[in-house]
Image (cartoon, rainbow, N blue to C red; front, side):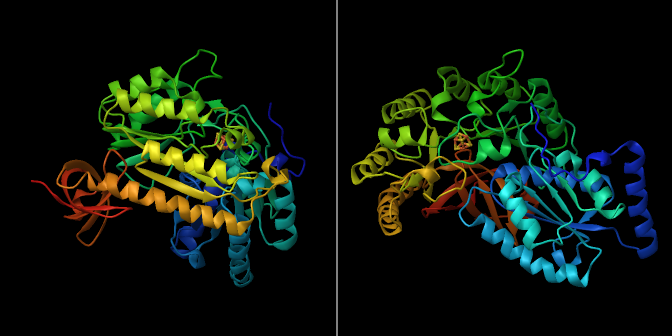
Length: 472
Ligand code: SF4
């Protein structure tokens, strides 16, 4: 059920066709009068989900006549797409809003919008409205599609525009997107999350899990392929539970087989995989689908069963290690990466040593490591046995002392081997790309190769990247 928040100011401004035309005409008029297009600048904080939302925001703004500027000082509309996951996210956004305040003073017609996860929290919205009353537009993770209406209301009706929906079962297909890259694309397959890990705000700010219909996903990827896209990353808070709420059941494994058939797509990635939902069928699909990259990001978070219980992760260390074993024996060249939280409330020295044990046993190809920090509104924030900061930092350093040599050693095993690398960016003749195992590779070559898959022989490795040369 959708629950629209009470602080809506724009109920009356659902955009009908006429208003969209009026908004577009206004922007066209602005162009005729000034010789310039109206410009927007988006500051995106946080994860790939937010990056993808920003692509949708860009797409909608382009469709009503805006063009992007990389300098906020030149922008007619500045949008903050915010995140709540990272520590100090609020401070960062509020600090930047403080800078934009001066800009708004000198350019009163400039619109300032704030959206994303932070705006789903009423207390943060209230704080923002109090401290930064100049903000014109506020919208949440479930109301991105309303942006043109909100701009109309702010620009033409001169009203502050706020639209937040707490939870929704609706999925808005066909939102225009302005893709950042031609050769790769992010594709949502699910929205929201049902898992309620006790440290995480996502279920509260992005709502319950909803899966897109497989036909809609497949159609989107076919269009991407026709447009020259070679690599898709399927996005969801837990892609493994894809399809569980669809009327006609369809599993994530089945979806992979279907996407694997699409001509033009050469690589399929996905994230994130929850260990409790990684099935044998899915492991088989990873092995059998030749386009599915042999890389699984499988967040373990902690090695101790007691900590995993307190985190509400719904698996044990033994179950996790068993999955890793299955992955490695079924897909022998699989790369496994993870997320680890150090210093979760109540974590003892013994618990921490279980995490180290998992790291040693799995021999991760890479890992994102985090110091636990309190997220207001989560169950873990209320747990009383918080680990002192100094101890957290000590354990964090000890974890890296174990992890980094393992990662480096994995990279060393790549020396003198040749890997297909998708070239992603270039600075002069220095190219950067990724192997199917998600390893970052730097090598020399022409920037014309961006978007191509080239064979690269690895000549040198570091912990976080490898170096190589193109193999002719
Ligand atoms: S699975 Fe857990 S950590 Fe991941 S988004 Fe859902 S609640 Fe957050």
